[in-house]
Image (tube, rainbow, N blue to C red; front, top):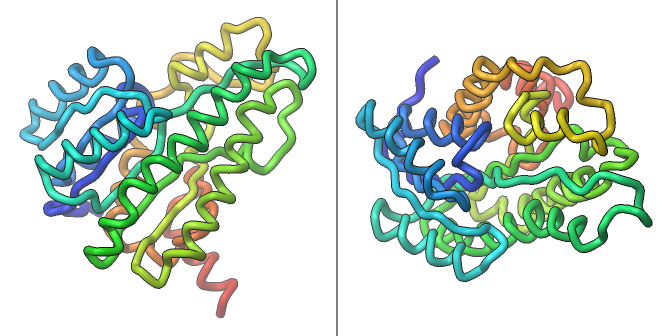
Amino acid sequence: MSHNLSGQVAFVTGAGRGIGRSIARELARAGASVGVMARRREDLEDLAAEIDAFGGKVLLVPGDVTSNEDVLAAIGAVTAAFGPVTLLVNNAGQSKPYGKIGTADPLVWWQTQEVHVLGPMLTMSAVIPSMIAHGGGRIVNIASMAAKFIGVESSAYTVSKATVVRLGEHVHAEHKDAGIKIFSIHPGSIVTDMVRGSMADPDAPRRFDHLDPNAADGELLRVGSQIVELASGDFDALAGEFIDLEKPLSQSLAEAQAATA
């Protein structure tokens, strides 16, 4: 099913590579105007060239999601270029450090909390007032199934992703009556550059060993297309839920409706 997102304004963090890149590309392909943020300008320029090639609308806003100054400047630039943000996708991420608590570098550990928790807190704080003023909007936070289990020697990642899910639950409780729909998602076991780095890291837990380092493109396209589906409004009944995108959204919706019947 194709969706027309013309008139929507999206802002995607961590858009230079992997999942964020696919999400930004598919949103633009569906007609949304897309602001893309990442630390490396060259990655964003490559993405912009892809989007320009099919006539999409994109604005590059390089920056660091843990910097409130960078976030406010980026949201301001996107709003000036396209209008108020109607869809926020928090995708920026990192996985290190690995190791048990007490041996892992606590300052590097905290940097992961900043990327996964402070980053979304800053971006959501920047867009929610405008979303309320304009009758609502949608927010997608890229979480992980890691939010649901104890990741021995990878607590930086698992703790931060669990916090992302609980943060989304608070936004849902506080702003659902204002028309804001928030989704915390598990995109699936996808081989991105970050995962390849983990697979090659001798300190990383061996839970990545079953993955094929060359398998990525089809799964990345799947996630990009599923975010387009969420942006369409067809699955707003799933707002506030933790959604496993390894299942079709239609299946998750049917299960949620059956549970409340």
